[in-house]
Image (cartoon, rainbow, N blue to C red):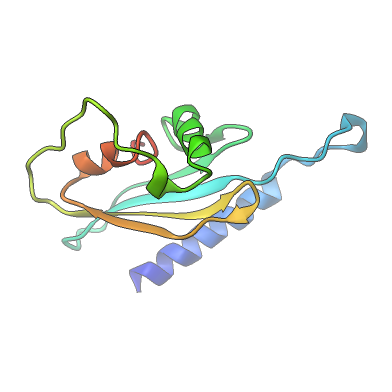
Length: 136
């Protein structure tokens, strides 16, 4: 049921983002940039609910993600695939067992992303797991 709620919530946020996206006018001479908006969530696997949720917007950078500029650059290098963003180098994952599940849904340059879900041993590992994408 939580998965359905996340999917509905993510779809609602994406639809809301589409409605709010500025459209280029004919005077601009350029078509609008493809929509990039991704809903990210990190939730406890032990059932205590979501720990963190953020919306990441790119082109232009925005949303509620606290490291949006860096996360967008990392995703651009990975063609929008969270799985392809490497772990942050020089950071160690804490040896604590408090598993969390990270998810991502949305659009990268107007194309739906492959839904992402990954379990990490704890929130600290999730924050460094894919660059800055899950560090919000």
